[in-house]
Figure 1: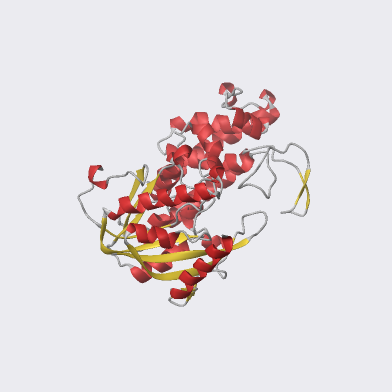
Figure 2: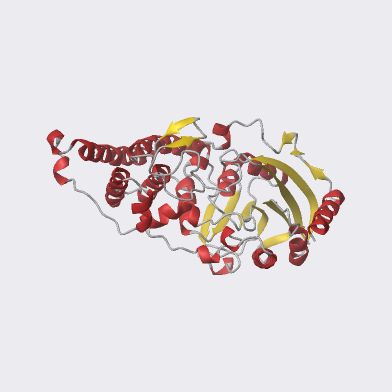
Length: 404
C-alpha cells in the first residue's frame, strides 16, 4: 500500500514539474541566518510549526500586488498577516487557538511606543526588586519590599514544571499585569519567559516529556548543565527584546488592514462578522497542520495555565494525539476539505491558493479536486529543523492552486 502511495505522489509531482526557486530565490533559504529568519515581531514568541517570513514574502511579491486581500485560514502566529502588511496588502487570518490569536494581536497592533517601553521597564523593575527580596530577604529591604509576599497557584502544571523561585517570580509578574495598559504585551513577555524557565533540558524547549530536577549532560552545550532555577533572567532578556522588535516593525508596517478572527475555519461566515462588507479575497497563503505531527494547544500549555485561556485543542485538525492511522488521515482530509470549501465562498473567481505542507501521504491532489481547484504548480522546499533536537531534514511542498 505504501509503495502505491509513493508512486502516486511521484506521478503527480512529475506531471507538475517541481520548482525549488522563485524569482531566482532558493526556497530552502539555507543562506538566510537565524536572526533574519526571525526578524522583528516574528520572534516575539516561539511557535513550533510556523513557516519562515521569507517564504511568504517571495510568494506574495510574485503572485499578488499592493492592495490585494490575502486570507490565511490557519493563521497560527500571524506570519502571513505581517508579511502582507509590509507589502501593502490587506489580510485576514482565522485561528482556533485563543492564545495564538493573542500572539498575533500583540505582533500586529499599532502601539504608542513610549508608553509601551515605559510600562515594560516599570514592571521589569518591580519584578527585579521582588526577585532580590526572594534571594536576600527583608534585611536588604527597600520601600517596595513592604508589599512583597509569597504567591501560590493551584495549577499542577506550573507547580510541577517550575522551580520554587521561578514560580514566585512568574506569579508576581502576573499579579502586576493588571496595573498596566498594554497587558497583552506583558502576557506575551511572561509566557515566553515561562517557557524558557521550565525545568527542562536546554536542548528540548519545544517538546519536553518530563521535568528535570537534576544535573544532566546537555547535547546543546556539550557539557553538564543544571535545570533553570529562576525566571528573572528570561523576563529581563525578553523585556528588552520585545521593545526592540516592536520598534523595528513599527518602522516597516503600512496602513494595510490586518484582521484577526478567533474561530473555526470550517464554520466561519465572513458575512456575519462586524466590519465585513462583502468583499472577496484575491487569494490564500497558508500552512495547514501536518497530519499527526503537533498538538498546537499543548505546546503552549504553560500559557493556558497562566492566563486561563479557553482550550480548543479538541477542535484541532490532525493533532499528534490522533496519530497517523488510516482513519486519522481520512478525518484530516475531510476536515481540510471542509475548511477550503468554506473559504471558497469568500474567494474571487480564479483566486490563487498557496498551501505549504509536508504532503508525504499525497492527500492534497485529492483535496484540491474536492474543493474545485486546479493544480498550477508544485514548488519544492527542503527544510532544516534547526530548533529540533535531532536536526532532522524534511521537505515541504508549496501547492499553487487556482479556484476553477
